Image 1 (cartoon, rainbow, N blue to C red):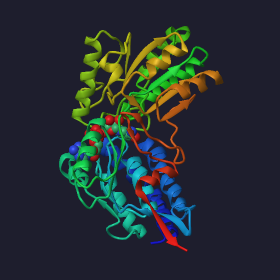
Image 2: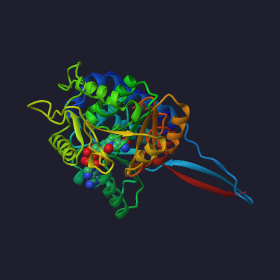
Image 3: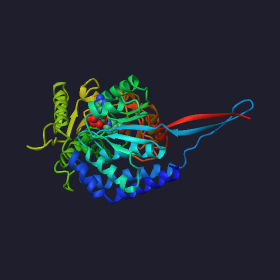
Image 4: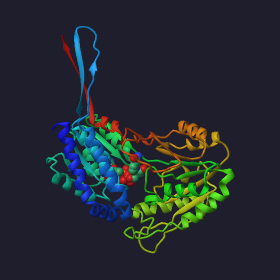
Length: 417
Ligand code: NAD
């Protein structure tokens, strides 16, 4: 199929997804405890924006004219790699699906998608809508199942040509091993994070408190890019802490289908228990619990927005990804000190900076080892902004035109003149 034709199909697919926004947001809400309203105004619209971005790119995949010495002419082609395995997590079932599937289809690949076992419903619905849009049979294949069965079957399969994975660092390692043991397929890994949000003395405290609340409590902290380590400079620290606690206590936990709710339940019992265990670690390692720290309801996997202070860099709650509504708040004095602290985990996914100083913003943006830096904002995702990790947050790129590279391979053609 030509690039133009692929683009046309992807646009039609996007139109159909738009028309089913309500049901799709409800499926993710039921599966993952995500807020219905957020699904309708963020997840599904972002997905169709992604589809349309790559629809426009599908007929602009170029090779190059090569400068071959001697009596030869050369050119390169960029061809689809073939079958792409796509393995995704449960925290953003819709966005994760389209982050991978849109560039893969634009590049001309077919996909075998394995949604997370907790959240298969929207992926199945997307396959159905793709069929209605006219995507040929066999182009989008959805295989629900567990990681060690359905997922492992994809990563070890000799006919799968590449794997695009988003999930935990531990499973990323298994996927790389499996690819190495089978057909040496290339893999791209978008993995975990423990991202710092750095707030300087010159910040507007109210604005910084709101950003920090969004950074850790949005989607109940189940976000790879969550700002889970909040560093606040000493001059505004006391005021910040007081206001951050009030803001956390005003963050309404409850039914994700109620439009007044700010935060629904953790995705499942396992995740609920994992978060509570980290809270216990925080307490036993000597951090001070200022608010939250326990289930928010007698029934269901709800956890109160939680804030710890007196956290030190060696504690588990400062180093490990909790994937829940738990903020580790720390005080710092100087720019150099906070750069060192911000970089002291094995992860490097994102960083946030709040300051009015352009100098400080530029200096810290360049010094932090993170794939994305948000200055005076947080969670600003755009199809055109490359997203990927440094260090053990993975490698490979989502978003941006470069995300198609993992689904393309380059061929040189050299002809004697
Ligand atoms: P996970 O790694 O447990 O699972 C992710 C996917 O991998 C699921 O579909 C799962 O079934 C599958 N899987 C598990 N074992 C497998 C195996 N042996 N072979 C093949 N597939 C296997 O992650 P999760 O708990 O679903 O999601 C949370 C994690 O995802 C967090 O660490 C989070 O940071 C990360 N995440 C990263 C990004 C990013 O862009 N960097 C985005 C969202 C989530």
